[in-house]
Length: 206
Image (cartoon, rainbow, N blue to C red; front, side):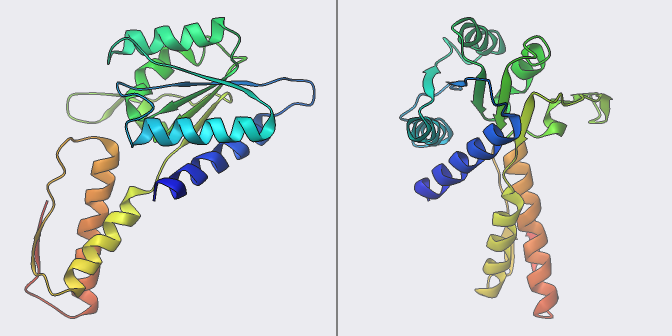
Protein backbone atom coordinates (compact mmCIF):
# COMPACT_ATOMS: atom_id res chain seq x y z
CA UNK A 1 0.00 0.00 0.00
CA UNK A 2 2.83 2.38 0.87
CA UNK A 3 4.43 1.78 -2.56
CA UNK A 4 1.08 2.40 -4.24
CA UNK A 5 0.62 5.69 -2.40
CA UNK A 6 4.16 6.74 -3.28
CA UNK A 7 3.50 5.94 -6.94
CA UNK A 8 0.31 8.00 -6.89
CA UNK A 9 2.10 10.90 -5.26
CA UNK A 10 4.95 10.71 -7.74
CA UNK A 11 2.44 10.70 -10.59
CA UNK A 12 0.74 13.76 -9.10
CA UNK A 13 4.11 15.47 -8.99
CA UNK A 14 4.74 14.63 -12.66
CA UNK A 15 1.34 15.89 -13.77
CA UNK A 16 1.76 18.99 -11.64
CA UNK A 17 5.20 19.76 -13.06
CA UNK A 18 3.94 19.27 -16.60
CA UNK A 19 0.95 21.54 -16.09
CA UNK A 20 3.10 24.27 -14.54
CA UNK A 21 6.13 23.83 -16.82
CA UNK A 22 7.76 26.42 -19.02
CA UNK A 23 10.70 25.72 -21.29
CA UNK A 24 13.12 28.18 -19.69
CA UNK A 25 12.39 27.58 -16.00
CA UNK A 26 14.47 25.47 -13.61
CA UNK A 27 12.54 23.83 -10.81
CA UNK A 28 13.73 23.21 -7.26
CA UNK A 29 11.33 21.19 -5.10
CA UNK A 30 10.88 21.58 -1.35
CA UNK A 31 8.61 19.52 0.87
CA UNK A 32 7.33 20.94 4.15
CA UNK A 33 6.48 18.28 6.75
CA UNK A 34 3.55 18.62 9.10
CA UNK A 35 4.01 17.93 12.83
CA UNK A 36 5.62 14.55 12.08
CA UNK A 37 8.84 13.69 10.29
CA UNK A 38 9.91 11.78 7.19
CA UNK A 39 9.99 8.42 9.02
CA UNK A 40 6.38 8.52 10.30
CA UNK A 41 5.19 5.68 7.99
CA UNK A 42 2.36 7.97 6.91
CA UNK A 43 1.80 11.07 4.75
CA UNK A 44 5.15 12.68 5.52
CA UNK A 45 7.19 9.60 4.66
CA UNK A 46 5.31 8.68 1.48
CA UNK A 47 5.36 12.29 0.29
CA UNK A 48 9.08 12.60 1.02
CA UNK A 49 9.92 9.32 -0.72
CA UNK A 50 7.79 10.15 -3.77
CA UNK A 51 9.23 13.65 -4.12
CA UNK A 52 12.78 12.38 -3.66
CA UNK A 53 12.30 9.58 -6.21
CA UNK A 54 10.73 11.92 -8.75
CA UNK A 55 13.41 14.57 -8.36
CA UNK A 56 16.29 12.08 -8.55
CA UNK A 57 14.82 10.52 -11.69
CA UNK A 58 14.43 13.90 -13.35
CA UNK A 59 17.57 15.66 -12.13
CA UNK A 60 15.68 18.16 -9.98
CA UNK A 61 17.08 19.63 -6.76
CA UNK A 62 15.07 18.53 -3.70
CA UNK A 63 15.08 19.18 0.04
CA UNK A 64 12.62 19.02 2.91
CA UNK A 65 11.91 21.42 5.76
CA UNK A 66 10.44 20.54 9.15
CA UNK A 67 8.52 23.20 11.14
CA UNK A 68 9.62 23.75 14.74
CA UNK A 69 6.11 23.02 16.03
CA UNK A 70 2.61 22.06 14.95
CA UNK A 71 1.44 25.62 14.27
CA UNK A 72 0.42 27.72 11.29
CA UNK A 73 3.14 30.24 12.13
CA UNK A 74 5.91 27.64 11.97
CA UNK A 75 4.51 26.11 8.78
CA UNK A 76 4.47 29.57 7.20
CA UNK A 77 8.03 30.16 8.45
CA UNK A 78 9.27 27.00 6.71
CA UNK A 79 7.50 27.90 3.47
CA UNK A 80 9.13 31.33 3.60
CA UNK A 81 12.52 29.76 4.33
CA UNK A 82 12.19 27.36 1.41
CA UNK A 83 11.29 30.24 -0.92
CA UNK A 84 14.17 32.34 0.43
CA UNK A 85 16.52 29.40 -0.25
CA UNK A 86 15.45 29.38 -3.89
CA UNK A 87 12.91 26.55 -3.99
CA UNK A 88 10.05 27.32 -6.37
CA UNK A 89 7.86 24.20 -6.00
CA UNK A 90 6.50 23.69 -2.48
CA UNK A 91 4.84 20.36 -1.61
CA UNK A 92 2.71 20.13 1.55
CA UNK A 93 1.03 16.93 2.84
CA UNK A 94 -2.26 17.29 4.67
CA UNK A 95 -5.24 19.50 5.54
CA UNK A 96 -3.24 21.15 8.37
CA UNK A 97 -1.57 23.33 5.75
CA UNK A 98 -4.80 25.12 4.78
CA UNK A 99 -4.13 28.30 6.76
CA UNK A 100 -0.44 28.38 5.85
CA UNK A 101 -1.38 28.09 2.18
CA UNK A 102 -3.85 30.98 2.44
CA UNK A 103 -1.16 33.13 4.07
CA UNK A 104 1.51 32.48 1.43
CA UNK A 105 0.15 31.35 -1.93
CA UNK A 106 -0.93 34.81 -3.10
CA UNK A 107 2.28 36.40 -1.81
CA UNK A 108 4.66 34.12 -3.72
CA UNK A 109 2.90 34.10 -7.07
CA UNK A 110 6.01 32.84 -8.88
CA UNK A 111 6.14 29.74 -6.65
CA UNK A 112 4.14 26.58 -7.45
CA UNK A 113 2.28 25.10 -4.46
CA UNK A 114 1.23 21.43 -4.40
CA UNK A 115 -1.25 20.68 -1.60
CA UNK A 116 -1.89 16.98 -0.94
CA UNK A 117 -5.20 16.07 0.72
CA UNK A 118 -6.23 19.73 0.75
CA UNK A 119 -9.33 20.46 -1.28
CA UNK A 120 -10.53 23.84 -2.44
CA UNK A 121 -13.34 23.63 0.12
CA UNK A 122 -10.85 23.15 2.96
CA UNK A 123 -9.49 26.61 2.21
CA UNK A 124 -12.78 28.42 2.77
CA UNK A 125 -13.54 30.38 5.95
CA UNK A 126 -16.61 29.09 7.79
CA UNK A 127 -19.18 30.49 10.22
CA UNK A 128 -19.90 28.75 13.51
CA UNK A 129 -22.91 26.99 11.95
CA UNK A 130 -20.74 25.48 9.22
CA UNK A 131 -21.90 27.77 6.43
CA UNK A 132 -19.29 29.42 4.23
CA UNK A 133 -18.27 32.85 5.45
CA UNK A 134 -15.69 33.54 2.77
CA UNK A 135 -14.93 31.41 -0.28
CA UNK A 136 -11.25 31.07 -1.14
CA UNK A 137 -10.46 31.44 -4.81
CA UNK A 138 -7.78 28.93 -5.79
CA UNK A 139 -5.03 30.76 -7.71
CA UNK A 140 -3.30 29.32 -10.77
CA UNK A 141 -0.09 28.58 -8.82
CA UNK A 142 -1.87 26.18 -6.41
CA UNK A 143 -2.62 22.53 -7.25
CA UNK A 144 -4.93 20.71 -4.82
CA UNK A 145 -4.66 16.90 -4.90
CA UNK A 146 -7.51 15.33 -2.93
CA UNK A 147 -7.77 11.61 -2.20
CA UNK A 148 -11.18 9.98 -2.54
CA UNK A 149 -11.44 8.42 0.91
CA UNK A 150 -15.19 8.02 0.44
CA UNK A 151 -14.53 5.24 -2.11
CA UNK A 152 -12.60 3.17 0.45
CA UNK A 153 -15.32 3.82 3.02
CA UNK A 154 -18.01 2.77 0.57
CA UNK A 155 -16.29 -0.53 -0.19
CA UNK A 156 -15.74 -1.22 3.53
CA UNK A 157 -19.39 -0.58 4.36
CA UNK A 158 -20.64 -2.64 1.44
CA UNK A 159 -18.31 -5.54 2.27
CA UNK A 160 -19.35 -5.52 5.94
CA UNK A 161 -23.00 -6.09 5.02
CA UNK A 162 -22.09 -8.72 2.44
CA UNK A 163 -20.16 -10.57 5.18
CA UNK A 164 -23.35 -10.74 7.24
CA UNK A 165 -22.95 -7.83 9.67
CA UNK A 166 -26.20 -5.97 10.34
CA UNK A 167 -25.51 -3.81 13.38
CA UNK A 168 -22.85 -1.43 12.15
CA UNK A 169 -21.32 1.83 13.29
CA UNK A 170 -18.59 4.22 12.26
CA UNK A 171 -16.46 5.99 14.87
CA UNK A 172 -14.03 8.23 13.07
CA UNK A 173 -12.11 9.94 15.85
CA UNK A 174 -10.90 13.34 14.64
CA UNK A 175 -13.45 15.28 12.59
CA UNK A 176 -11.03 16.04 9.76
CA UNK A 177 -12.00 16.09 6.05
CA UNK A 178 -10.44 12.71 5.21
CA UNK A 179 -12.25 10.93 8.07
CA UNK A 180 -15.54 12.66 7.28
CA UNK A 181 -15.32 11.60 3.64
CA UNK A 182 -14.49 8.00 4.63
CA UNK A 183 -17.40 7.88 7.08
CA UNK A 184 -19.82 9.27 4.53
CA UNK A 185 -18.72 6.60 2.06
CA UNK A 186 -19.05 3.87 4.70
CA UNK A 187 -22.67 4.76 5.44
CA UNK A 188 -23.50 4.93 1.72
CA UNK A 189 -21.87 1.52 1.19
CA UNK A 190 -23.91 -0.05 3.99
CA UNK A 191 -27.13 1.42 2.58
CA UNK A 192 -26.32 0.24 -0.94
CA UNK A 193 -25.53 -3.31 0.15
CA UNK A 194 -28.67 -3.53 2.26
CA UNK A 195 -30.74 -2.38 -0.72
CA UNK A 196 -29.04 -4.79 -3.14
CA UNK A 197 -29.59 -7.70 -0.73
CA UNK A 198 -33.15 -6.58 0.08
CA UNK A 199 -32.38 -6.41 3.80
CA UNK A 200 -34.56 -4.26 6.04
CA UNK A 201 -32.89 -4.96 9.39
CA UNK A 202 -29.46 -3.41 8.74
CA UNK A 203 -28.56 -0.51 11.01
CA UNK A 204 -25.63 1.85 10.74
CA UNK A 205 -24.79 4.52 13.32
CA UNK A 206 -22.44 7.36 12.43
